[in-house]
Length: 539
Image 1 (cartoon, rainbow, N blue to C red):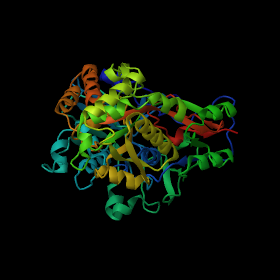
Image 2 (tube, rainbow, N blue to C red):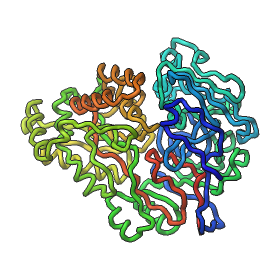
Image 3 (spheres, one colour):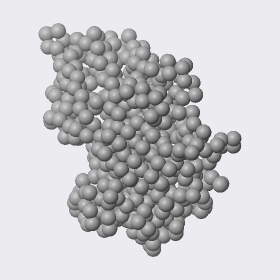
Image 4 (cartoon, rainbow, N blue to C red):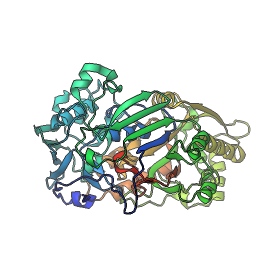
């Protein structure tokens, strides 16, 4: 089948996307399909949800992309391709988008997928009563009326999203967003079945109740153990799907996961921290590493609940400067990760990594500056700095945290007391500002710098440290109206380097063990928006 693609450049020109078949599993010449088309992979933790408007973690988003389909999808290179929408048009100002929906899209119960299902889902996303952790994403999309709805000052039916008819969806924005179509690949924008939600309430995502419109349906879910999704015969492109069943196994220990992978129980798992060099030599056709659109960082609690010491920018700078990122990437991780001195990864489309002063120093110079800064802040042998450092349970996170605390102890005499929590508890603790210094990670919701930098605006729902800077808020708001926001993004990164509300540690690489017969994994998609319907198992 012909693969339909369009680039961001096309959408910038206001092009109409032509109707075409969406990317699906294409078997390479010479490959023979295995009889068993079951794809099994490992999860570190139980996902937060499979409700499109509730899910807030990467592993849950992976499941949601299989169960539900939004307006647009991505191909193996990250290009936009049709999803439920066959195409879109936009005006010259790029503030009104009209999506044409395919007529053969159905829900798993046989009901047609309509523009009204998207209106319902997007209203639900921003409705304060939903309490979605991604409510702020609706605001980021600049949909007309969204700010007033989130603030409780307007009814949800005033949102600038209209079903012109069953197959035409109009979206009105308050800003010119040339990258708006990219945002519709995010799970929070996927449609939701109003009738199923109203009938079952919060229980609607259980296998016996769920109604979905993606290539797969949820057939089993044992919390913190496993979930199973199987082909959805109602999916409009089901004939192009090859993988019959997808099994996600929750395995908290990365070494246990590797053992089970090598025993043939998994098609894919993460490479344990520090083991990529060995595994890539022993299994060159299975160990892979590639750039990802993700940042690993630690965030300071700057709210009223946070420690007084962190209110002093010199303390924050000292802790960041004393961190030898090359030791973490080259000695601890060893998987092709990149040292981070900016919050936004260099892999971000159109982003020019700016020069920030501390990145230009040698590590010795940073260490010397850190000692001076901490002394000037009043901390030393007579007044040692001590704080708690929180991360979610993972052997890899533990190794990184230990390395960081050792650097601080040896160079600065600082004591960081480590604590770990299970994922959902960790999210709640961090979201309630019940921490001092906490691990954070962010993978881009779309491939543009604002997906990272908006995270540290004062209104962001994921600004767990409650950092606030009026200039950053203004710069990011203005960036939405600019054809080229490079100068704004550069200035924001410079402010972040000066004020250090978070400690950038490294930018991710995808470091996996991946069976040689699992085909079509999208290694060139830095967002890693993968779809099981595009994969297949060869003999």
